[in-house]
Amino acid sequence: MSRKVLVLGEARDGSLRNVSFEAIAAAKTIAEGGEVVGVLVGKAVSALGAELVHYGADRVVVVEDEKLTQYTSDGFAQALLAVIDQEKPAGLVLGHTSLGKDLSPRIAGRLSSGLISDATAVEVAGGNIVFTRPIYSGKAFEKKIVTDGLIFATVRPNNITPLAKEESKTGEVSSLSVEIKDLRAVIKEVVRKATEGVDLSEAKVVISGGRGVKSEEGFAPLKELAQVLGGAVGASRGACDADYCDYSLQIGQTGKVVTPDLYIACGISGAIQHLAGMSNSKVIVAINKDPEANIFKVADYGIVGDLFEVVPLLTEEFKKLKVHS
Image 1 (spheres, helix red, strand yellow):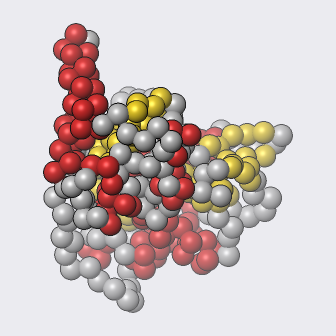
Image 2 (cartoon, rainbow, N blue to C red):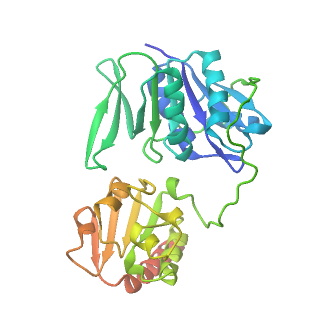
């Protein structure tokens, strides 16, 4: 059964986040041969439409307005609902990002629709579109289907493989005029803290530190290793609470959820709250002086030792491998 499925492309600093392409791949599965329509909302975002097409969208609808320069749930909801009203899709897919987690319940509420959040896989089975999502802080998984109405889901970054990019693929990029009004909040300016390297939520490699790093300076070897591997630096809540790093790096039940190809936990004991944010990583390496640390129970590889000795050694070995590769 072919369906029309909308995908919200998420732009940041003038470029599309990788989860947008993963959402298109999920939408292709849901569409079952039907049309996948990309949606872009913001200011001066129409130039990004072609990239959505290159990654599998059949066409793109763009809503641009000065009031959409910065994300607000009111403004983006008005824009997306207008596109939904025009296109009347059978499915809708967003990334399970900060934006997606904020916007999707509002849209679901306005449409009186169900919502499958944080899907890690989408497949067709037994004539149904089946979504897999984690429950109980990632200790188990459940499979869900939509029996009636809009098939609405958010997909977790780094879990669904994007389609191969086709530079030659073409599709219409059209504009929809929407009057954005009655905004309860207007963001005048966004002041971001300086960040280095790769976006943590989409990184393929994450080097994470816990209380074992002992200080803010203790993150220096982790940052060097992350730089060598082209990865991002994360942290446990314990490290954040101890003021070793900013809370924007926190991984766990009350922080970010990451699923990189490689997760290296340095000086992290493995509290259940932290495991909820990283236990689905493809390969987990734990470095800890305590051989009884809980982190070793979920690790694929464990190194019992002082992170300040082990991490620099790993960094040097990876540098050698890069030279010879």
